[in-house]
Image 1 (spheres, rainbow, N blue to C red):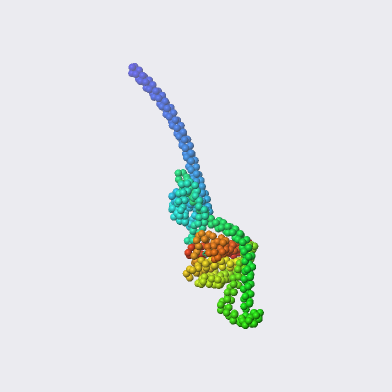
Image 2 (image 1 turned 30 degrees about the horizontal axis):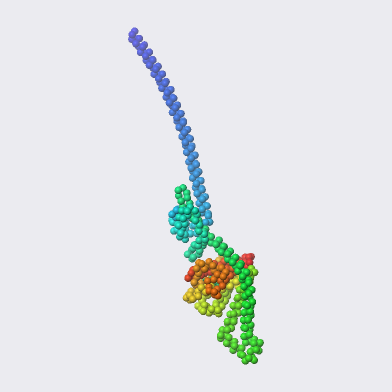
Amino acid sequence: MLALLLLALLQSVLILQLNRNRLRKKEDISLLQARLRMIEDKLRDRTEKWRVASETHELASRRHEQTTALLNETKEYLNSIIHSMPSMLIGVTPSGYVTHWNRAAEKATGRREAEVLGHRVDEAYPQLPHVLDWINHAIEQGTPLTHENLRMPVDPQGDVHHYDITVFPLVFSNNSGAVIRIDDVSLRVRLESMMIQSEKMLSLGGLAAGMAHEINNPLAAIVQSVQNIQRRLDPENPHNIELATPLQIDLQKVRQYLVQRDILRFLQGIQEAGSRAAGIVSNMLEFSRGSSRIEPAVDLHTVLRHAMDFFLNSLKMSQPEQAQGLRLELVPAPQLPPVPCNSSEIQQVIVNLLKNSSDASLGLSEDRRVIRLRTRRLQNMVRIQIEDHGLGMSEEVRRHIFDPFYTTKDVGQGTGLGLSISYFIITERHQGQIEVKSHPGKGTLFNIDLPLRRNEELGG
Ligand SMILES: Nc1ncnc2c1ncn2[C@@H]1O[C@H](COP(=O)(O)OP(=O)(O)OP(=O)(O)O)[C@@H](O)[C@H]1O
Ligand SMILES: [Mg+2]
């Protein structure tokens, strides 16, 4: 019985225990479930956050890509602006090392950007010897530095161009540097000097008209008188014979004497020079009236040969010692087309230039006393070159030679009008160009370009 009781007690204790265990398990499970839910919540939260973060990142990286593309585009755009500028643009560091070199700089210097990047600008562009000082100065002062109308040689033949140069200082994010801008202003300088020249010539026109009128009368008297003398010395002229016979003068013998003493040649010379002077005077009158006849087409070589003959003959007569040993040579271009021009005006120009060249080679050794004329066909022009190996001229003289009344010759030797009239004939009358290159002590070269096509305005 006791055993049964014990068994029943044990059974109830076990049942109790089991119930308690079941209860505890239930609690555990619900606790676990709560934790699971919490973890799920956290996971969802994290996933959401991660999604948001990843979207933000994607957006940022897309934006970054867009910004980079935009930056590249802007860089290319700026580069194309820099390269398409007609000015030379050179970017440099404060110590003068090249960082940018645009197409215009490549064209002007013949050096590619890749060749000069990282090199010093005065080595890359040796025609700019003081550029490092200019860069320092501009950066120190913080203001642009400008040099106008700088003359610089562009090739070994000595062609000179004029440039405007500005150095702009740059300051950017704790860095500095400079941009050098170089503009070739040769054309502007030439146009300015041509305008000044034609203004001077206009005022000269009035003066020329007055002078021409004054000179015309005595000149006509000289030419007529010489013609009369020639006629009255003619041994065949019946009136001369009629007057000489009673005086027992043998006109044939007189003629022989005049020939032997070169007197007839001198008279011929006076007559030719007088007619030439009359031609010049009438040209001057035409200038002042603003008209002259342009012949449709002229053989330029004939005009040049006439001018050379006339010059040499008149020099032999007036200054035989200067004519001694002087050589004039013509190197004609083959098949030169006829040129529309006023042949007597062009002859006048050539004679003026020959006279100057001959003066400049006076007293020099024989090999330097040669004046060479050449012709060349250019695209729409014909070029006449007159070259001497005389004394040449300094830059200062060269700048003034086309000015009316500018002369370096002694009083009575030169009027200073030869080149200004020549300039007027070529540029105004023929719409051509005349330019000069000269090396002191070596010689001088004049280039005259005459247009081939006859223009409506040609001849004013
Ligand atoms: N071939 C040359 N070589 C050196 N100097 C020259 C030459 N041609 C011209 N010149 C210089 O230019 C100056 C002006 O020349 P331009 O012919 O106008 O006047 P000029 O010869 O002095 O006088 P003009 O011709 O009126 O008698 C000359 O005085 C001379 O100094
Ligand atoms: Mg002269």
